[in-house]
Length: 229
Ligand SMILES: C[S@@+](CC[C@H](N)C(=O)[O-])C[C@H]1O[C@@H](n2cnc3c(N)ncnc32)[C@H](O)[C@@H]1O
Image (tube, rainbow, N blue to C red; front, side):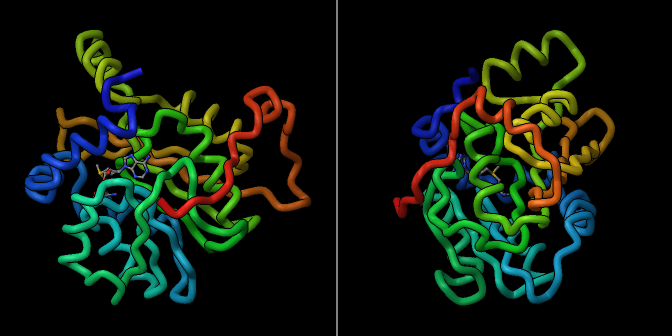
């Protein structure tokens, strides 16, 4: 497990990175990539949408182009302070400080869930994805952007030491284990030679979908009681 796949380490990291995040972020995750991914989620103007790991609000800004009912959640007070400066504390976006693995929301309470650039810090991504499935309405979709696994051996060693990098097969397994269906993956890249992003879109099952629950029973039931930390 990478050094930043630890909630306290990630909070400390973002205490400092938040100062420069908006300036360096576009080199690997830019507005063009964000907007392309947003089109895939197909958000309706009346949708209630959750942005998990919203950070300084880069993707939140894109989500606001589709719906005015956006909730942003992040575990870093420093990142969220910068988001408050952009959107106000409660005006355009409803902000929540909390953990992706313990979402402080009721079952079936969102029409869509978005999360970009955050999964790589979660110690238990499957627990978080189970939480996504719990709070998104049955039949509705979630979209997660994370770092694609590098090709070169050297970068693989570096990547594994820092955080979660994963390929399509691993993404497929994580989403299936969390109980999602209709899972699709796309690779995005800002410029040739820069790190690739892997975008996964999946649908929460309805009663008429057949889901292999034996896989979920093997990993236990990671869904946890909502908190407001
Ligand atoms: C790379 S930033 C992404 C920000 C934004 N989503 C974007 O697209 O630019 C990752 C964010 O995930 C947040 N994060 C990391 N682990 C988290 C967790 N367990 N729960 C909630 N947020 C988390 C970090 O605090 C940070 O703000």
